[in-house]
Image (tube, rainbow, N blue to C red; front, top):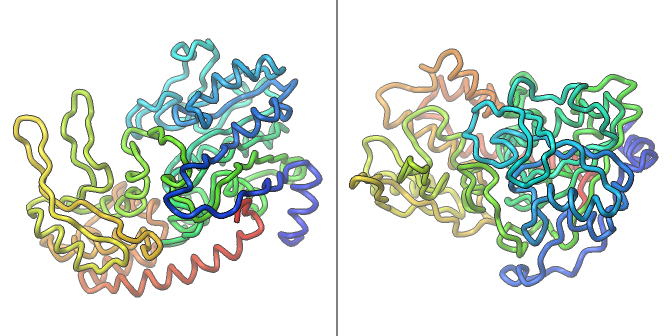
Length: 439
C-alpha cells in the first residue's frame, strides 16, 4: 500500500485525519503578533471539549503545555474540561518532569500533582521506563499529548511522544496530539538525516536534524511513514488525531505568533535559546566550545543559553573572528564579555541572526567541529572513544561525516557537506508534504 492509500484508508477511516482549519490571510512579519495563534488546546476548549467528552483521559505534558492565555493544559482539562464531561485521570511527564525543573538527563520519579492542586498520579516517562506500561495505561480510554517541541531532532520530547504513541496503539488507546508552533518555523529542513543505526532517545525519527514540522505533523508522518514500531494488529487499529492550530503559518517564528514563551526545559528559556539549540548544540558535544555562560549556580542562572559561544583559552575577539570567518549566511558573531559571581568573566561571541531566511541553522555546528581540529593539539573526534563517541553519533546521526571528520580534521570541507545535506533535506520536505497541516 502506498502512502496516499495509507492516508486515505487508515487515517481517514479511523477519524485520525483532522483537516487544517481555514487560515487567516498572510500577516506581514512584525504584525503577526497582533493576531495571536490559537493552539490545539484552545481549539479543543472552544469546541467545549467534544473530542474528549465521556473519555478517561491521560495527559502527557509539562509546564510549557499551556493555552493561549498561559493556563496549564492540566488545569484546563481538570477544571473546564471536567465540567464538560472530561475525566482527566492521569498525568505523564517527559524529561525534566511535568514542572520542568529537573536537570537534563536526571531520573524523574513518579509522584502526585500537588502544585496544581489536582492530586492526580504523575507517571514519569524519564525514570524506570520511558514507555508507558500497561499498569500506567490501565483505565485510560484516550491519551492526549501536549508538548512544546523546539524543532530539532535530538530534543527528547518528540521521542517521548513516539514511545507513548506506540504503547497506546498496542493497547488500543487512541491518541490526540494538541498541536503547537515549531519555534524554528515550518520552512526549514536542515542538517544530516538520521541513520537508523544510530536511532536512540536523542533521535528516534529518520529526519534531518532540523525537521521543519510541528509536533502534530511529525506524529502524522511517524504513523503514515511506518516510523513507529508496531505489531500488524496495532497498526491496523491505530487511531491518531491532531487538534490543529488556527492562525499559524509555516513562515512564522515564535515572535510572530503573539504567544508568550514558557521555558520548555532549564536551558531553553526563550525562543532565542530554541534557535540557538539548533545552531550550536551539535558543535559543543565534543571539543572545547561552550554555548552558555552560567552566571550563578545557586539558583542556576544562565546567560544567553545556546547563543553565547565561548572556547577555552580564546578571547572574545578570537571567537567572534572565527565565527565570522565561517561565513555562515545570515549569522554574525559579536565579541562579548559576560560577568558572573565573584568577578568571574566569560569571553566569547554573541550569535546574532541577521537573516533567518538565509541561515542554515546547523551549519555553524559543523564549522565549530572543524575549528576544534584547528585550535586543539590533536583531532578530538578521532580521539573520542566509548560512550562519548557513541553519544555524539546518536546526536549527529551521520556516521559518514563523522568518519570524514576523524580522517580529515581541519581539512574537512564543511560547505560541501552542508550542500549535500541540503539536497537530502529538500527530498525529505517533499516526502512529508502530505502530512503538513498548514500553508
